[in-house]
Image: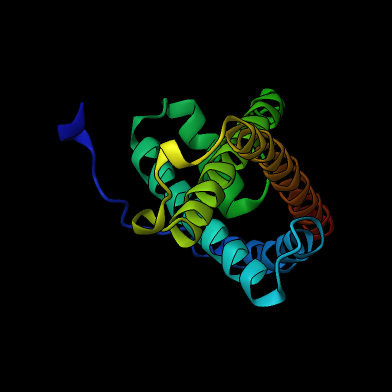
Length: 179
């Protein structure tokens, strides 16, 4: 199966430029949400938004270029028709597009959430400055656990809000460009 994979000779430049536009739309929206909800300064929230969006975009294109040669001929034909001519050949492809959009939305949300957690942990936690466990009391451990649990929920909610707002703005741009 992997021996049949080939690098495409025609790159969808229009789709790549639209993706660049989407990144430029998503970064300020998500940075604003991170700044307001997580109380980051503007520089930090912009750094996190840029990191998450570029990583998810690169990974998305990587997955696209790996999965495109494996697709059935009919789906490949619909994909080419949409990328180059901005329309579908059959009406059943639109339901597949909606399903794919939901999958992409939630996969992007999960990817951004875990990436934000990794970035926050790698930039804030210093393993060489950890306190010994026997010095901390049970009460302090419980407070840390509850605040970490609350922060995790806040992080997930904030990432979901930021992702939803950026996807909504991107959907509006797609509707405007299709007319």
